[in-house]
Length: 206
Image 1 (spheres, rainbow, N blue to C red):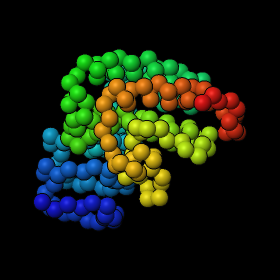
Image 2 (tube, rainbow, N blue to C red):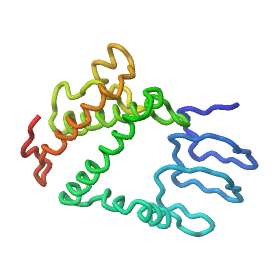
Image 3 (cartoon, rainbow, N blue to C red):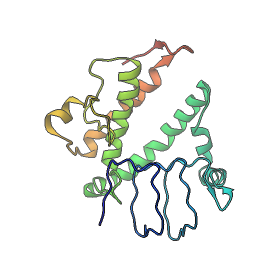
Image 4 (cartoon, helix red, strand yellow):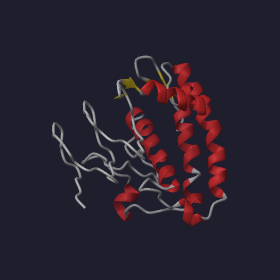
């Protein structure tokens, strides 16, 4: 089985190539053209913009269907401060039931990956790391912004500092009881950080 990892194939031409059962992850198809393609039993998950299939732009159709399934989803793409506050309130409301459901699962399932995607624990750790990176590091400029047991994103750019705990002992897998308390803490940091229209930090409580 051929593997192509971190390669630039932009502008390449594929003709009479069998991609059956092929697996694509973190790939870019911007400006790609498929002619005479046979798409059957295909599962696609990703950012979809200006995608035309047989002459039809399917992106608005997908957005409409997802918003029909999850009515609050339409409010999670805000354009102003009030919209962001409303979106954050929605996230804070739907998150606790997710954690409660996870607490009822066997511990092994919380660390289990499905089709290569992050486990629940890894996802929770990344939410901590993302909040630290965007708020505590980028906005507040704290010298040690990362909180254990945060987990940086896969494919993090070289030179980006890792949390000290991961530098020292690698990517550990803490249990839910150690990971869960960090999420409310980082959420409070986000809620308590206020910016002026010019992007200056107005008030914050750490």
